[in-house]
Image 1 (spheres, rainbow, N blue to C red):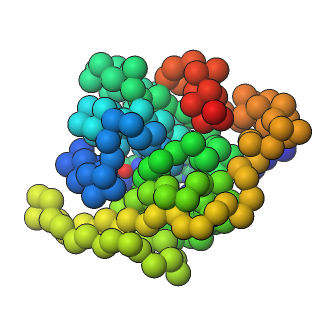
Image 2: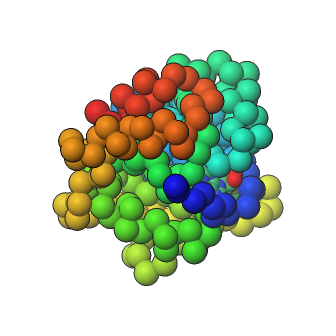
Length: 200
Ligand SMILES: C[S@@+](CC[C@H](N)C(=O)[O-])C[C@H]1O[C@@H](n2cnc3c(N)ncnc32)[C@H](O)[C@@H]1O
């Protein structure tokens, strides 16, 4: 049985900051963007509407998942943005070109190995406000929005993967698909469509 835990409280990036962070990461329409802990969907909306990138948000709080999905629909972005309700720790991230996170130092410490093991070289990791402990950022950008300062950290995953993402391992596939099916609940979109995006 897996144990889920809340790795950060909800606080929205704001559409302007999300858009700025994604532009610092050089997001374009060919990218697959994941927001790990997507809250009410600002990053999904910025990514899909401004950059036309396929974007998946993973969120543990069911109410926020629903709110994010309602907003995605209000913006008419269902073809480009999907919301997965579940614990981001169990979500396979090997397919992402860009991962956005607005979490805590403790969360990043937990996620460092997952990122190293699952992400392909060149994957851009963007964090808002809080850096990833002990990782040297490729870019650090300080800006202001509505009289409030914020900082965006950009990292590029280097070298080859230490391990393949668990979901890439054939013998584990069935088990993991089943685990995913049980632990995640696709709020927006279709389970197989999301799986295809995250597995292939
Ligand atoms: C600071 S908010 C960021 C929201 C959004 N990314 C944004 O920038 O607007 C962090 C979010 O992560 C979610 N979260 C925390 N732990 C999580 C987990 N284990 N799995 C998925 N989401 C989680 C919280 O519920 C919260 O909505």
